[in-house]
Length: 239
Image (cartoon, rainbow, N blue to C red; front, top):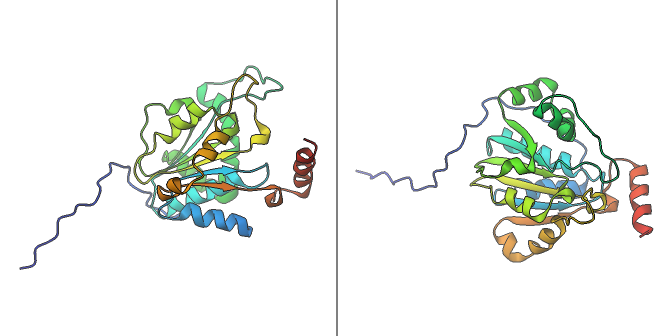
């Protein structure tokens, strides 16, 4: 009689995966963007620090990959996080509504990307089923995320402590995309951002062996428009 082998695989408490399939629009990706998608969907990848100027599709690529992972039932939820930092040059003042309504203004970039990639009906269903969550970075303390995709956006506005808080929430089977454009920081001059130091810290072979990668988009990777590419190059050359 054949003895059944005991199941010694890792048991991780996690939410059940989605039952329905999403119809995700595939955009016309560049070769560099395809490289990012390949790295981000690799089963061994856990964290990617993504550095790049405006218009290089950092946010939509991370949203696209997260939706792919959700569709393939490799994760159960998508969490979008960013620092609730106002412009360094002007304050927006009082915002009407409750806490969720106030924070919606900070979540508009993510909602815009979802609308580019999914139908409105699918976005509404994901929201109704609480498959997508959006909140400020300081709300993540004390949480533990298993089998989730975390998009930490606008990290040029996050301190090292804030980024580390998010990274240390990661449980098994989760993936995290840490996105930043250092050119567009809104932090006050007396407050240091943490992205660039952490990007350098994890740019080594030891980090890669743990599934942590760094990825850089440059000015030539800007696809938003020719005018944005011109502006970014002009600003960079003027320094």
